[in-house]
Picture 1: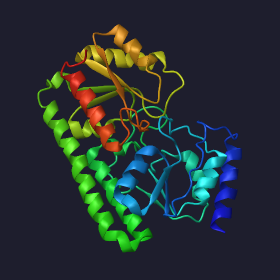
Picture 2: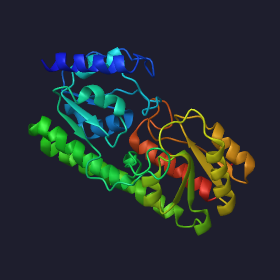
Picture 3: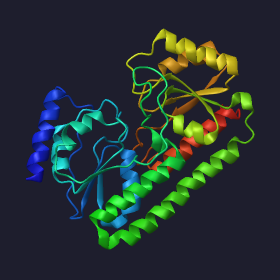
Length: 306
């Protein structure tokens, strides 16, 4: 009954979205016989696997490298969801595409952002809504990890103590990245303490690091940045003598390159937010993502950009 409900609800979602996939569906892998945990995107999958360890098999709907905001579910997603024992989603409107079928299905699921200290979006149509990118804060990520451990313990209570221990160890590693970033940023002049990116996905990280956030667009990958948005970023970079600017891996950096051409700022590199890389890429894990982004930001703001 549960599988039929998921498939029917997902089919409705696919019809509503025009049945167009955002990325090629991966071939399903043979099951290990372990409880199946499904996440909406790769960052949550890595978190869940770190907490769940050898007791669960974790699959991400959105594959590494794909954009999450505008993703449209595929027939393969229906099959995967029909086998899930537990689903993790970020919430805060990040996966609007997913809610169309999972909310109607009889599948245990947890919203891992519940309990974070939210920051509102400040521009564009979503102004006043909670910014969904809370996992970019090493502090708020620890709330995610607690929620994951709790949900896994409800699913497999016989392993609750191990999930709790895994979560505590993982939180220590996340906290270490945060502490190292703050130490490295200590020497950045106040006037240079600004994080300029394509998307406003770094509000939480900027808050943690004591940086002023500036972006070209607020949330979601825009098809084309407007001249007004680009001009606003250029003016900010000039007024604050920002030494380096950045863009995210899942969107085009062309708008930010216009900012670079019009200012003295250098392009500091590609930051990862909504997706991990493949196993051979620069950020195969969430901890790698945090370290990669922190190192690029510190290097750019301290003059280390080549």
